[in-house]
Amino acid sequence: MYTQNVNEINADTTMKDEVDTKTFTMATFHEKSHFWGRLTIWSVIVLTVLLPAYLSFGLGYHPGWQIILSGLAAYAGVIAVVWALEPIMYFPMLGVSGTYISFLTGNISNMCLPSAAAAQSAVGAEPGTAKGEITATLSISAASLVNKLLLIPIIIGGAIIVANMPPQIEAVFPLVLPAIFGAVFAQFAMKKPIYGAIALIIGICVNLIALPIYLKSLTCIVLTVLICIQLERMKEKKLSKS
Amino acid sequence: MDIVMELANSKVMWLVASLVIGLVIFQSIKFIQLASRASEDVGMSKKEVRSAVKTGAIAAIGPSIAIAIVAISLIAFIGNPLTMIRIGVIGSAPIESLGASLAAEASGARLGGEGYDKAVFTAIVWVLCLGGMGWLLFTVLFTKSLGKIQDKVTQKGNGQKLMGIFATAAMIAAFGNLLSAEILKGLAPIIVIIAAAGTMIISMKLSDKYNLAWLREWALGFSIIISLCFGYFVI
Image (cartoon, rainbow over all chains, first blue to last red; front, side, top):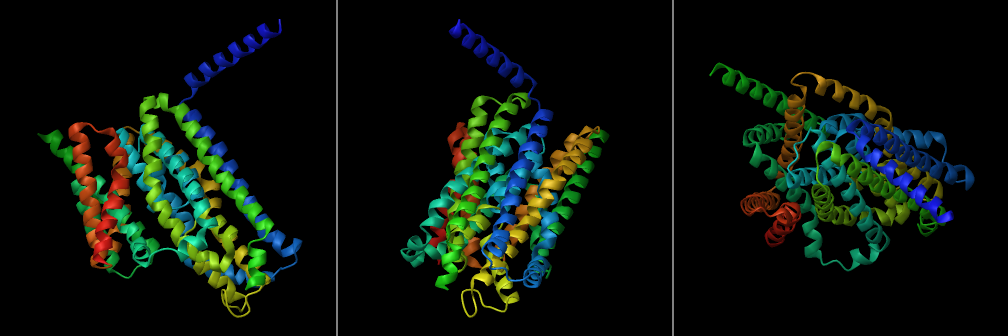
């Protein structure tokens, strides 16, 4: 009797699973992404407010609100624009779920986007499509996981690693960024050489002008996107004429 | 300085740091699950799902080590747990060290120097934690609206195609801009860029020609390693 019961329950849950996978559409995926994305990020927000609050009032090391606010104002003066600009700017490339993961784990341009681009190319998915979004989510999640698993031992054993690092190896680390950017750019430029040429020309011009960093990337993205869309329109017109 | 480090590396700091990193790890596992379940709906095979996860993981190794090594410079000033919190969640070593110096300055002290005490450290924790929250709050509050806008655009006649062009062009532009900044820095970055781009192009051509899925997955990792070898001999 008992085993039969268990079997029935098992049969029940497997049936439910089947129904679930069948009805798990992109819409459900987005709904669940909003729920889990918000839940995890809200939890981190709460934790990171509780920590300084505890140091201030639990342990009694409160430096005074004026000091905190003037420090925060100076800091915000440097980066506040990016708080809104980056999530909007990267949204078309990351999608709903990719945005939740990338803006929690960080390192968007040097880790998340390159990972997404590499995976989309490996699987053959186009950015901006549903398949592209799922591929990006899978690869960025995996990247975030690897990042934390490597970060923990390096931060904990940090002092020992730095003390024993040969200076020649240390000198190579600043070159990791150009290496990533060069490789990812080449991967795209192979497929869309004209887009690549436009982006590079605008990029060089923008970087020669003295603009704040966040405006550089925004200007480059807006101009390149406008020119590329215009180009595609012209191509279509030519096709419809001939 | 030693007294500050006592607080900076105290049990409470470690506890919160572990919880925060735990949440980030939980989130990435949760999203891998969700995306695998949705994969059928967008016509992805199990093999493609595995390949996407593997490629993302491989591509993250190089950047992660570089990020962590740069982050070590923060430990001397703000201790291990706060470094973990600020580097494990969105933020980068240069921005965080700037924030820490600004907070110390506001308290009338120098980071790791004169007048650096527990109250100054607390001010730094406030500024870095609230500062990093900007992105988190925007993401948590507005991602849903951004999603709705995207849905509206893709529902229009040629919206899907437009979105594709938009996403591709924006991605190329973002990297074109980052790349240009590096090109203008000098000879060593240029050589590294050429080597990385060359390795990427060769890997892609080879993997297309002989249909080597593993090479496509490793292409970014190889490009980073090989170009850094070139860089090593230049500097």
